[in-house]
Amino acid sequence: MKDIGIVRHFDLAGRITLPIEIRKRMNLYTGDPIEVFTDENTIILRKYQSKCVICDESVDYDECTELKGKQICKNCTEKIKQQNSSE
Image 1 (spheres, rainbow, N blue to C red):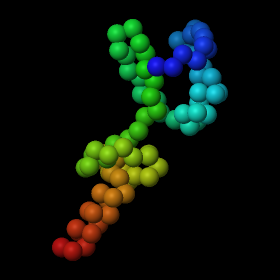
Image 2 (cartoon, helix red, strand yellow; image 1 turned 180 degrees about the vertical axis):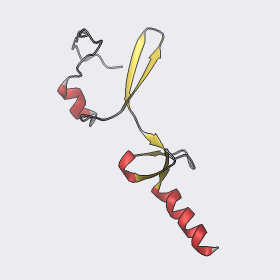
Image 3 (tube, rainbow, N blue to C red; image 1 turned 90 degrees about the vertical axis):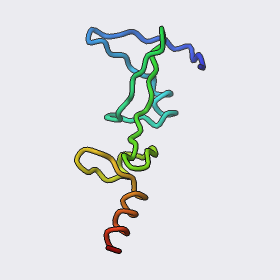
Image 4 (cartoon, rainbow, N blue to C red; image 1 turned 45 degrees about the horizontal axis):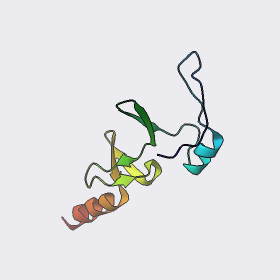
C-alpha cells in the first residue's frame, strides 16, 4: 500500500472526501459506486465492477445488459442471441 501523506477527517455524518488527485487517478466520478471492505484495522475502498452472472467476468455497467436486476456482458448476450436464432 502506498502512503500518499494526505489526512482527512470525518464530518458529522461520518463522510470523508477523497482528494481530487486520487479520484482522477482512479477514474472516479460523482455517482460512481464504491465497494467497502475491511481487513483487521484497514478500510479498503475499491471502484465497483459489475460481474456477468453467466461468465463471472468484470464488466462496465454501461457495457452490459440488465435482466431481472442481473448483469449480462455483451459476449454472453450475443451468444444467447445466436443460440436462440439457431433454434
